[in-house]
Length: 264
Image 1 (tube, one colour):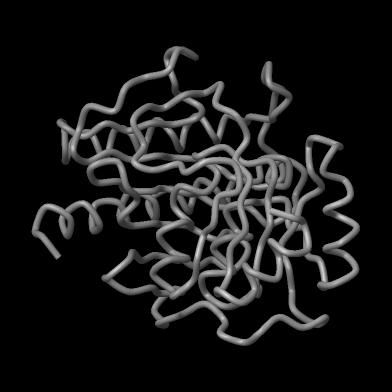
Image 2: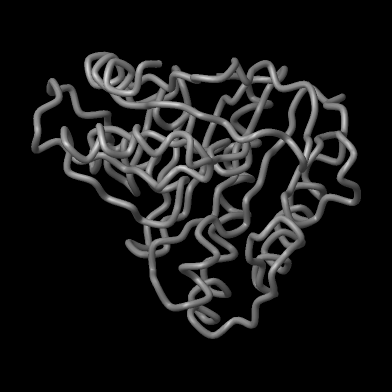
């Protein structure tokens, strides 16, 4: 691992963990509003974004930091830096605002357009999940990995109902073949696959900031993230109006099973 990368990983850990006290203090009582795209935002989302952007900027002024909540324009912003970060200050804001503990801070580090390290603070378990391809994966202090078992009807699948109802038949096929868990946080679905809590996940609804940190976690844990509607990397721009990403994730056998069920 290069010294440049190592320094950023340590700075990212510190920046994320510095927000935990605020996140817990306002859980279930932060005032919220609805944005133009129908998603929720709280004052804590904004505060965490501002804090992490400031902390990263102080250490690495040449890096770009993209946050869903602090974007100055909805026009696509080109990626120009070797290292950049993609932040979702609270993934699962609906849960957070209403007192449901499945929510997370998600910070992904990219180098040359590709995710190299992920940091996910899992509020419900008070654990930092972190790691990257070729570096390792940790669930708190414990090494972790993707489950290796072949899929069975008892396998746990992270799944949210598709936003586009034309995919409703996918939901029926998945419910018939897996045990479904819908946590309200796409970040946690994929991060939990990475550390072996869930067997797999399918999503039709996400944007890049929802999974930017969890993608390198899953790969570091020996899993696969297979995009169903176009490759996402190298990332060349940050676009608030990007289309929804569809993907499956888990071990190779589970991904093959999922793709067969939904005809992908």
